[in-house]
Length: 116
Image (cartoon, rainbow, N blue to C red; front, side, top):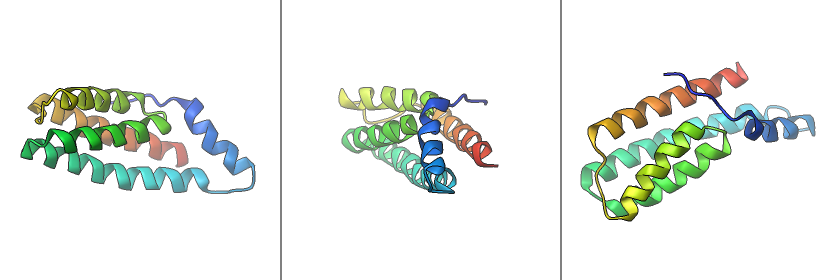
């Protein structure tokens, strides 16, 4: 799976590098990759437990974080999960789980290529 990143969002981090903070993009991407992996695990656990509130809160957080890095595909999926959880749907179907895992992995790969 290949994802496109919104470069405008990443350019904000690049501007910080040019403003005297070398390595900030790599540092921020590393933090996203580590933190988002934990969030994906938390989403899967919440879904397995049928916990709609935890699913809503965690998907909202991952949605915002993904959007900050220009990962619009992942942010859009998290928005859909959040919307479903808001209506009381506490479980993701198998297709959503598979898509979440694939989009997360592809997003992390795409972000990694930004600093390679």
